[in-house]
Length: 199
Image (tube, rainbow, N blue to C red):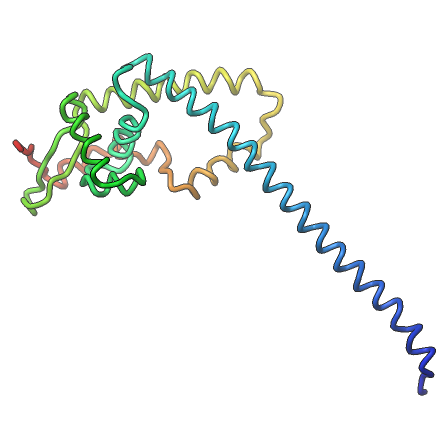
């Protein structure tokens, strides 16, 4: 049965209203998602400032002469094993010249050393010394103690989903879990057969 023009217009009105509601709902959902993302980013910025403060205090208690960027270099070596200077600079997102100067200072402090793999004597890699290893371990212990105190003081707001979310965030940012750090895998040293570099 054919509809009159008037009937067709009446039928179109509800359809348009429904489409408008769907569009508005989509915009509302997108706005809500944007607000959730912005809220999460703001919370992470505040938390990161607190974490940097804890890291700085933990480091100052052990060795006030080591800067946070220098400590981050030690952490890279602790987590990823022997590295070239260019690899460290890329990981820290600094210029190669900046990475070189920073590593030179750590060599002079006795916290890292140069080595050459017997498989390729042209390559110079950097690795932690025992003193550098102890520094990373002691600072990590300090940080864990301070974080434990903070988490305990705010235990009522720590939901079960928080820890998995933070682990996923750390993984997405490229961080290696502590239990997978090179420090826990000493066989890597014997595998590579690195020899100290006298240069």
